[in-house]
Image (cartoon, rainbow, N blue to C red; front, side):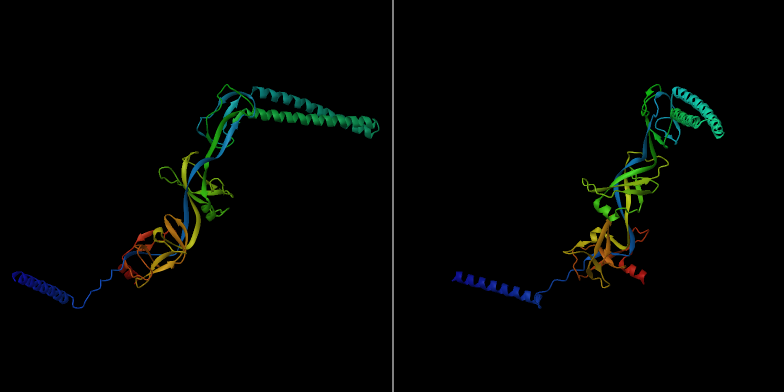
Length: 396
C-alpha cells in the first residue's frame, strides 16, 4: 500500500508541473509564433558619373636606337696619318676626322694637270688650223679633203682635252678623300685603325651614331593595333625612363607596320624623340606610353563595379528612391585601371561601386557615401565627395 501511494503522489506532482509550464508558455506569448524582423538595406557607395572625353593610353616595353648609324669608311688607299677626334664624343657634320697620307694623290693631280695643259695646247693648235683651212677652202686654195682633215684634228683635240679634264677632276676627288669627314652629326665610336696603318679602299675607320633625335622601337598587341587603326597618324607618346623618371619631351609615332608578325601576334611601331642633351642612349631599355585613341562623350567606372550577365555586362544604378536597378551597358576598353562605358549610362546616374555583391534588381539600399567624377583634361579621375545628405544640400 505504501508503494502504491508513493507512485500516485509522484504522478500527481509531474502532471501539476506540466500544467504549470504550459500555462506560463501561453501567458508569455498570447498571440502565437512571432515573425523575425526584416534585415536592414545593404550599405553601398555610389559614383555620380558624367560624360567626358577619355584618352585610351597603353604602356609598352621599348628599346632606344640611334636615328642613324653611319659607318665611316675610307674611299682611297693609303697610310692613316692622323686621327683628329676623341672617341665617344659628339662631332658635327663635315667635321674632319682622319687624314690619310695625300702624297701619292698630290702627285697624281699634278700629272693630270700637266696632261690637261698639253691637251689644251693641242686643242688651241687644232682650232687655229681649222680656222686657216676653212678660209683657204672658201678661196678654193685647198681641197675639201684637206679641210676635212683639219676638222677631224680639231674634234680629236677636243676629245683629248675633255678626257684630260675628267682625269684632273678624278685626281682632285681622290686627293679630297684623304681628308675623311663626318657624313652626319652624332657620337663617334671607337676607331677601327690607329695611325700608321695601311688603309684599303672601303676600310672601316669609325662609326657615328646620330642620337638627336632617337628612334624608340616597340611592339603593340594585335588588339591595340586594331584600336589605333592601321595608318593612324595620331602621334603623341611619352617616354618613361628607368627609375620612373619621364623624358621631358613628347615624341611622335612616325611609323606603324601594316602587317602583324605571325610569330608574336604584335605590330611593330616606331616613335621619334628629340634628345638634345643626349640623355637617351641607344640600346637603353625604356617604357613608352602611347595614346591609342580618343573616346568622346563616354563614362568611366571602376572595373569592379561591372557585373557580367548571361548576355551582356551590367551596372547597378540607384534611383531617387534609393532602389537599385540593373542597367545593361556596352563596354569599351580599360584604361588606367578604369572601365570605359560606351552606352547604357546618362550624365548624373548614380552607379554602385562598392557593396554590390549581394544586390538584386529592385532592392532598397542604404547610401553611405557618394563620389563625384572629376573632369580634368579628359582623364576622369574619381575624387571623394560629401555624404548623400550633404551632396543633396549642395545640389539644392
